[in-house]
Amino acid sequence: MASDSALFIGWRLPVVGREADALEMFGSFVGYLGKQQATGTVDSFEPCLLSPHGGDLDGFIIVRGDRAKLSALRYSDEFEELVSKCLLSVDGFGVVDAYIGDGVGVQLQRYAKNVRR
Image (cartoon, rainbow, N blue to C red):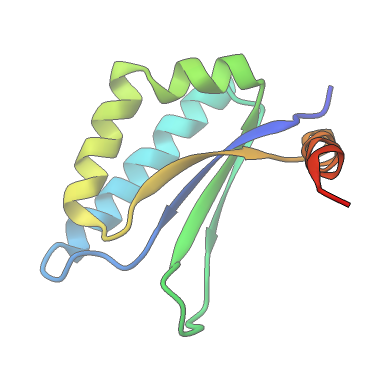
């Protein structure tokens, strides 16, 4: 079954002077997500680094999976510990629920139903 939910984990540049810590945290986060994929907690994940573009987003990871499993993951002690460490090393670090696949259509239908005509 295709995922209709995701987590969007985004960040700006590393905090000046903490670049090595930020790189280490990136590796830790990717390793953690790999373990979560191996156990079936997440369906898949994809890290993305952006080329310079004048904006404030430097990269992100999209984590695909079942909404309930992603919610449990997001609020687990281990995930929140990783997030806490990232906040010390990376500017603009954040985690946001996202809709993908069929979830996009569901959200657009919901929006269209409520748009004033």
